[in-house]
Amino acid sequence: MDTQPKASHFIHGAYVEDNNGTPIDVIYPATGAVIGRVYSATPEIIEQAIVSAKSAQSAWAKLSGTERGRILRRAADIIRERNYDLSVLETYDTGKPLSETLCADATSAADALEYFGGLAGSLTGEHIPLADGNWAYTRREALGLCVGIGAWNYPTQIACWKAAPALACGNAMIFKPSETTPLCALKIAEIFVEAGLPAGLYNVVQGLGEVGAALVSDPRIDKVSLTGSVPTGRKVYAAAAAGMKHVTMELGGKSPLIIFDDADLENCVSGAILANFYSTGQICSNGTRVFVQAGIKDAFLKRLCERLDNAVIGDPQDEATNFGPMVSLRQLESVLGFIKKGEEEGARLLTGGNRISGGGFYLQPTVFTEVTDDMSIAREEIFGPVMSVLDFTDEADVIARANATEFGLAAGVFTTDLSRAHRVTDELQSGTCFINSYNDAPVEVPFGGMKMSGVGRENSKEAISHYSQLKSVFVRMGDMESPF
Ligand code: NAD
Image 1 (cartoon, helix red, strand yellow):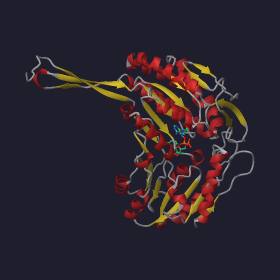
Image 2 (cartoon, rainbow, N blue to C red):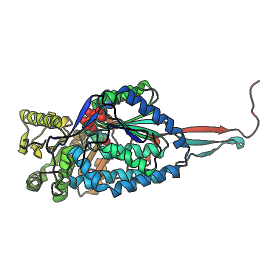
Image 3 (cartoon, rainbow, N blue to C red):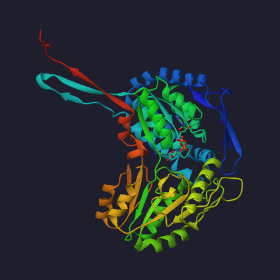
Image 4 (cartoon, protein in one colour):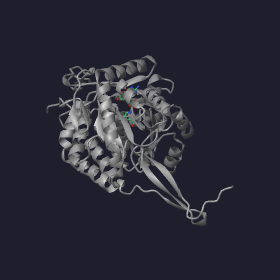
């Protein structure tokens, strides 16, 4: 596959280049080879993207929701037809194995377009009857020009989870992918044009954080949706606040996964593997603090080690591979730093912990036991394949420990006691809770964080309220009265 894009940016329905911007090499994580180059957007490119999006938005908002939805659903169909090629590209961009990308990336992007495309025609206001025959009605209106800023772990999915509700509601979007994974969003922009989306409604500009910052601070931008880390979220939220812009913040996590000793052993081991090693552990909602009750601990660790032997680590383009490299050398080094800290702070390295030799950014699936709540590996987001196993005996105590974090993205509970499952999830301070499951993210269900993990929700009908605003219109049927 030729991975070099035709040009760096996609503006007003066409590829645009400006090689005065800072060059960004695209690196294939499985080999370390340079597979493409794009240029960070210059101020001229940013201006072009904003002017184009502004010029296209109001006509788009005036179409009926059904007409907008039809285009989004057509884009979903094209994405599904090209799932294989899009998945191969996602694998080049991120290093995630094809066995994952074939079912979790373009397909999830298509789901979002199909869902919000279907919803677009049903976005209505309310009729509100009032005294004396007067009445009011509400109109659900677009916000205007939205900026989407992506992380590198799910470039296709993030591009569409933001674009689908934004476009369904009648907005235009400028999307800035992560500088680490610039390829996939450009393909989505091409597909939108093929599906009939008018030029300017979905522009892609490449760049480092400063390009994101320039977009966020521009007064013509009405909303910012960021997927990224908490430190970036703080900066972007503050910059958006200066212009009183709407925000959605999808940020990091350090989620608890609680395994009670009555849990089904095979299921909870599957849950822990999925919650720590899928996408080589580079998932925001991962359950990286695995609290295991005393009665099941030995059996859990024994079975976990046996199952980890089944990991097929290798060429991510080979469909037999189920564990790929980390996205970049930088991320690999950051995770190795956490592993070193874990050992220094007294956790026991049960398995893994080392870089795998060769050209790519491969790291062994790693499990620490005897982890205590105060250790760095139990407090900070690692964003790599590192599971921390913590011991517990008492339900109330584990709930308090699970909640003792600034994050609140996700949480999981494995138990066969139904009342306990609901009692515990009621107490957990997390945007998403899983009972005897982990990391499901269907488009029908709201997704987002509590506490420092975020603001707002993506997916589901709830996302509509984050990409639209209500106007109330009061109608007097009789004569006006006034004091004089
Ligand atoms: P990051 O915060 O370093 O970067 C995210 C994006 O923000 C990038 O596109 C980057 O260029 C841009 N950016 C950086 N500084 C900026 C600024 N000042 N203004 C505007 N934009 C700026 O995150 P990352 O390393 O790309 O991704 C990993 C992080 O993302 C993890 O913390 C992970 O938990 C989080 N994440 C969250 C979700 C979620 O839905 N909650 C999903 C995926 C990843």
